[in-house]
Amino acid sequence: MPHPEHQQHGSRPGPATVRSRVRIPLTFGDGYRVEAEVHTFHGLADGAEHLALRLGEPTDTPLVRLHSECLTGDVLGSDRCDCGPQLREAVERIAESGGYLLYLRQEGRGIGLYNKLDAYALQDSGLDTYQANTALGLPEDGRDYTAAAQMLTTLGAAGIRLLSNNPDKAAQLTALGIAVTERVATGVHLSESNVRYLRTKAAGTELTRGHGIPLLPVGA
Image 1 (cartoon, rainbow, N blue to C red):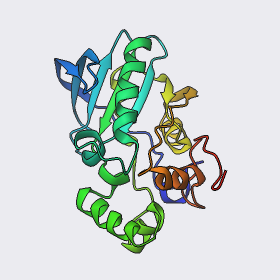
Image 2: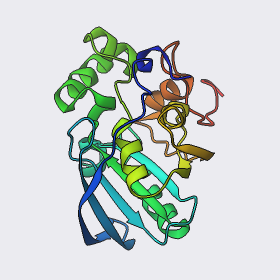
Image 3: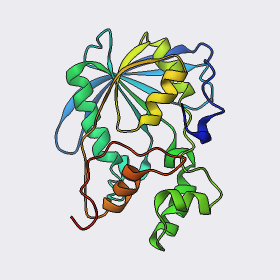
């Protein structure tokens, strides 16, 4: 079952429709290139401008990554998180296997960019990522994947292999009618700046389930 913060989610979403399709060549900083077919949508539950990138040739059970927008990591190259490297990894793995990368406008686990930066300031004073959100009166993880389920249904991907370390993504999608046949682990993109962030994410809390990230214990 989804954790308590997501108990209000899980009702089957209504239909969405494809608004547009456009081919975009992607080039990453390390020189990797691939072409994506980017889909936009009408009728998404939260009204946000989420994108689905079709990469390679999707199979009957495509590889899918739900990637939450992270301006600091994806665009600015911040080392405080592993979002940018995860995005780069996901694009190549999905292109090789065939599937979709859903780029979801859920900055800061759903709390927004300014709030995320406020949480960073609290983390600098000693709080972890979840504690900082709570201190701001915000959810530990405010993401709702209803729109993602709508997008996958519209794309004909009712059964998927989910590229994620996060069990809550699989739980929410399952509750929303998407069959997650396998959860495929992502790599561990560890740096001196994000080690505390990754340890916190791996451990989780009573509300936010720990991610399957293989990290050595502190002091090992």
